[in-house]
Length: 585
Image 1 (spheres, rainbow, N blue to C red):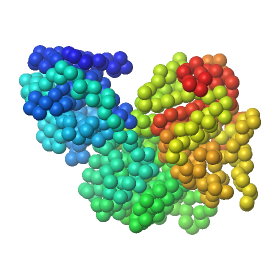
Image 2 (spheres, rainbow, N blue to C red):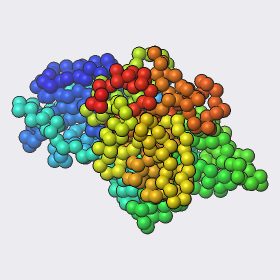
Image 3 (cartoon, rainbow, N blue to C red):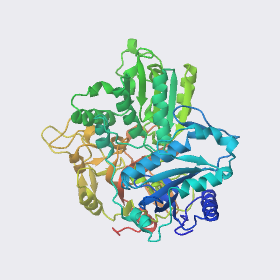
Image 4 (cartoon, rainbow, N blue to C red):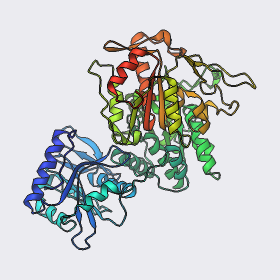
């Protein structure tokens, strides 16, 4: 079969399906059609298992058929949202494969292929019988995507044959590599546009399942709690903002809550500035705003960064007569008919942040709620570089294993700098529109500027010195407030900490690994005496080590296009240079 080139990183099961499908086409007389295996969509980790390329038999234009392969034995639809229960044992909910492939085709058409070039979809279930998946055929696809099994192989061949003929010139394949790609807007720009009525996002896989499930729950009005979990860059905040805009447009009473002052303040500013007629302040709230709230007073409450939920909404400033004793998670669940929690437990950083799937699910059941859990897999951040995000997880993993070598990614850059000056020069070189930042571990004092004075140069490394972001809610001499450091272009002049960056993304990020985490011979060593985050003093050594690794994992996961890493420790820099072939070395 011409053009078949399975990606060597493909899981063996998927690779087997691709090759068996190629044999099916060959036996059907379609072996001369070009095929690209594991074709990744731009700016995301999602990929077509197989993409057939040729010319349309009637028009002679370039034509494509995208194929999704599932090793399912049986499946049935369960929700109008598109959820499917698959398997005969160990049942699991996932997105309907037709919806999954339709969304991928829509995304691909918008990002990479001219709209006049037809793309069809085909779902292949090589291990299923028609009788065990027949209900999947009932879903009507806007793109014409269909489901086939080996029992319907003749119909599958006809489906392909009516859409594709061989292309001896192979120009259909060449078009894929030369077609211009439209880069997605940064999160904050896209969010503002969502409130203008633009559909900025095409959600893929379980991202779309999560969005549809929330809209379905809002329409039904039943008491339900949805828990949407995912690692960094899986689209949690994008889904949350898209839902907020859509539900508000539909007339539902809905609010968005976080436990982060920078996040909520930035959402209010960015969305409000771009949409002056929108009552933004009331849409964006904090977790502790729901103490004593009217039960089920909202249709939907969207809780972003829900791993930051705390035990109670009361603080040391809360009057005794206003302390309800109700756990914060219960307040959030009770405040709306439908409560939605987006979280990544690995990003719980401050002592007292207790949001987990188990905590939320247990509280929801105790309060009479139906619970639905959805796990996100597709990645948008790091320009969809699952390779980079997997590399950072392995690099800072607590388990002892050989260090991962960065083998490169065409859509993402990693470099190691030998000096802070080198790192800053590269970041400023890439900061074309104020969307790049430098961040660091909390290993230096964070001083407050005196009135009329410049920010103190707290971070000093040799003869290089820079200030932290502003300490407080007001800007200082042109530097933005701490809450707006991530979104204001002037933020490039100050260094951010992990508490500035959660929930945000930057085109390029310079990451300073401070002396609180260093490499010694064959392991990472956390040095608590080098860390000045005094909130960690109550942690034991094991918990401190875990916290520091999480901190740097979050800092390393903020980039869309590239990360420049500098360590203050020579041995650590030497180790990193071994792992990364850096232009800066």
